[in-house]
Image 1 (cartoon, rainbow, N blue to C red):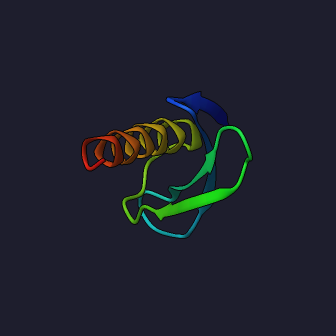
Image 2: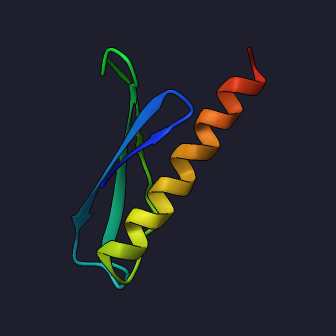
Length: 72
Protein backbone atom coordinates (compact mmCIF):
# COMPACT_ATOMS: atom_id res chain seq x y z
CA UNK A 1 0.00 0.00 0.00
CA UNK A 2 1.25 3.47 -0.82
CA UNK A 3 -0.33 6.81 0.05
CA UNK A 4 0.59 10.50 -0.25
CA UNK A 5 0.36 12.49 3.00
CA UNK A 6 1.45 16.09 3.63
CA UNK A 7 4.27 16.02 1.09
CA UNK A 8 5.46 12.53 2.02
CA UNK A 9 4.92 9.10 0.53
CA UNK A 10 3.95 6.39 3.00
CA UNK A 11 4.67 2.84 1.87
CA UNK A 12 3.29 0.00 4.01
CA UNK A 13 4.17 -3.66 3.60
CA UNK A 14 3.23 -6.52 5.89
CA UNK A 15 5.22 -9.40 7.28
CA UNK A 16 3.88 -12.67 8.67
CA UNK A 17 5.33 -14.58 11.60
CA UNK A 18 4.16 -17.56 13.64
CA UNK A 19 2.58 -15.69 16.56
CA UNK A 20 -1.07 -15.54 17.60
CA UNK A 21 -1.42 -12.19 15.76
CA UNK A 22 0.85 -12.91 12.81
CA UNK A 23 0.67 -9.80 10.59
CA UNK A 24 2.96 -6.87 11.34
CA UNK A 25 3.27 -3.61 9.38
CA UNK A 26 6.57 -2.27 8.08
CA UNK A 27 6.27 1.45 7.42
CA UNK A 28 8.60 3.38 5.13
CA UNK A 29 8.33 7.13 4.82
CA UNK A 30 9.75 8.81 1.72
CA UNK A 31 10.06 12.41 0.60
CA UNK A 32 7.14 13.13 -1.72
CA UNK A 33 9.19 15.05 -4.31
CA UNK A 34 12.49 13.15 -4.49
CA UNK A 35 11.24 9.78 -3.17
CA UNK A 36 14.31 9.80 -0.90
CA UNK A 37 14.02 7.38 2.03
CA UNK A 38 13.46 9.21 5.33
CA UNK A 39 12.34 6.74 7.99
CA UNK A 40 11.40 3.11 8.57
CA UNK A 41 9.11 2.20 11.43
CA UNK A 42 9.05 -1.45 12.48
CA UNK A 43 5.93 -1.99 14.56
CA UNK A 44 6.12 -5.00 16.88
CA UNK A 45 2.40 -5.33 17.56
CA UNK A 46 0.75 -7.95 15.36
CA UNK A 47 -2.71 -8.08 13.80
CA UNK A 48 -5.09 -10.81 12.61
CA UNK A 49 -5.06 -9.84 8.93
CA UNK A 50 -2.73 -8.04 6.51
CA UNK A 51 -5.44 -5.41 5.97
CA UNK A 52 -5.56 -4.59 9.69
CA UNK A 53 -1.75 -4.37 9.77
CA UNK A 54 -1.73 -1.99 6.78
CA UNK A 55 -4.35 0.28 8.34
CA UNK A 56 -2.42 0.39 11.62
CA UNK A 57 0.82 1.09 9.77
CA UNK A 58 -0.78 3.96 7.89
CA UNK A 59 -2.07 5.48 11.13
CA UNK A 60 1.34 5.09 12.83
CA UNK A 61 3.12 6.69 9.88
CA UNK A 62 0.74 9.66 9.77
CA UNK A 63 1.23 10.23 13.50
CA UNK A 64 5.02 10.21 13.00
CA UNK A 65 4.72 12.78 10.17
CA UNK A 66 2.41 14.98 12.25
CA UNK A 67 4.88 14.86 15.16
CA UNK A 68 7.71 15.97 12.85
CA UNK A 69 5.66 18.96 11.73
CA UNK A 70 5.05 20.01 15.36
CA UNK A 71 8.80 19.89 16.03
CA UNK A 72 9.69 22.30 13.20
